[in-house]
Length: 143
Image 1: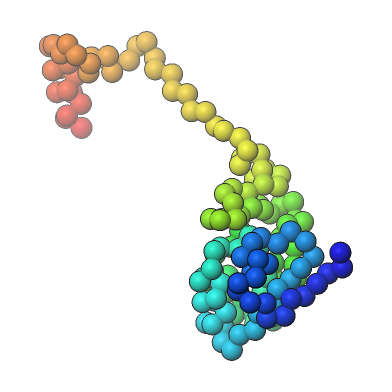
Image 2: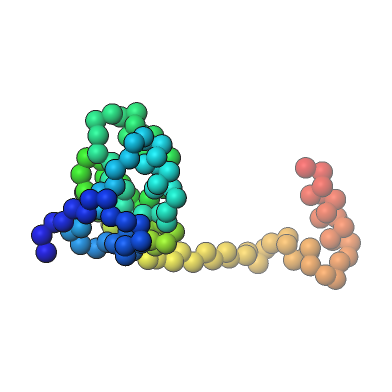
């Protein structure tokens, strides 16, 4: 399928309501940067956001005021191809990220294990309480 631009697609079209996994790029026009940002923020968070322009202040404003799974500036898909960047969605477009170490972290579960020493004073804090518990609380409350 050749790359396809969709100019001014209606929001009711499925291509505007579902994630796109193909060479299709919807293009929406806007009159102000605030209008474009409001449009992005008024819809489910996108898997990818593409900003085109040379104005670094506007670029930074778009990236700061919108939330997306990833972003590419002055291009498309490069954030996906870069193995040293995390890739993944946020909200409706998914949870977590993969690629390299990021994928290992996303698809791994770190199991925390705490080993209590047999020579621990914590056992004196469990019932039945006695003189040793009273002494230990007295020592600990001096802090």
